[in-house]
Amino acid sequence: MHRPAARLDRPPRFDRPNPVAFLATVLALGFLVVSLQGVGFSASTFVAGLPQMGRFAAGLFPPSTDRLEPVLWALLETFQMAVAGTALGILLSLPFGVLAARRLSPHPSVEIAARGLISLFRTVPDLIWALFFVVTVGLGPFAGTLALIVDTIGFCGRFFAEAMEEADRGPQEALTALGARPAAVIACAVFPAALPSMIATGLFSLEKATRSSVVLGLVGAGGIGMELEVALTFFNYQEAATIILCIFVLVLVVEQASSLLRRRIIT
Image (cartoon, rainbow, N blue to C red; front, side, top):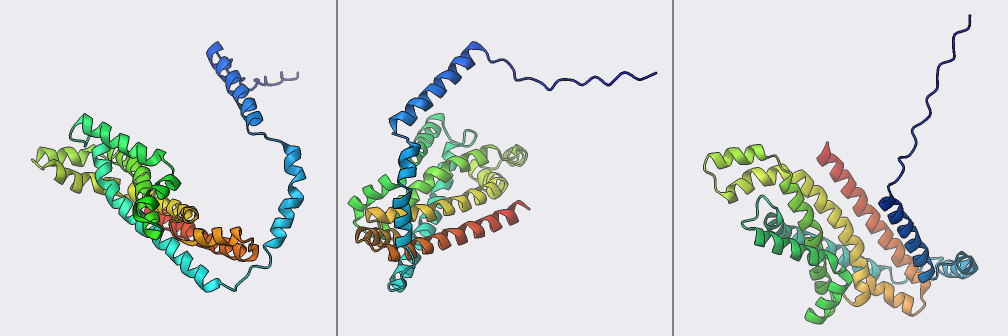
């Protein structure tokens, strides 16, 4: 006698969406189609422009080394802006994070105000902050550094607050039971527990600031972005290629170093 073949169960089907979810999906797809039409998306136009892209790319080679020294000095200035802006921004993010954390803020109104300010810093693009500080302190890397400080507070302040809220409450409660003041609890229990997460966030912020500092130079906030703008304005594409390659190397080195440090912290 032959044994009956084992019954094969059908793979599970997708759950049938309820009317609200179905309507939301249709509206989202419809808005996507309208958005593509609104921005004038056209594959044929892109394909027709490929020869222009090719001619522009051909004009970038070979990269020019005639002004390599000033380009490298500008690249160093860009990295200095990123480091200074990130370091000062992280220091200022610590009190903002404490005030924005629900369990650590002295009063709900203070928490709301701190979170609102952090959201403002994060919502306004760093390019707008750079324009604001260029008007305030004039052209140069100082304006760019101030913009990066504000942008770093908006980025780190939020994640610092979340890391402090997720810190283990055991040591905090023990210190509180021993009569420790809130500042001592934060310094001795909250910060040590949240430190690995905050260091990783700070390293991500340095990567972000390095890329942002390049763009800030386009509005006169110092750095290599000003060199790139001048090269493109005067159609000096070979020099622009040199600047782009230098920027690529800088960003790649910073990202690799940051990734290595984060892996060491996690392990």
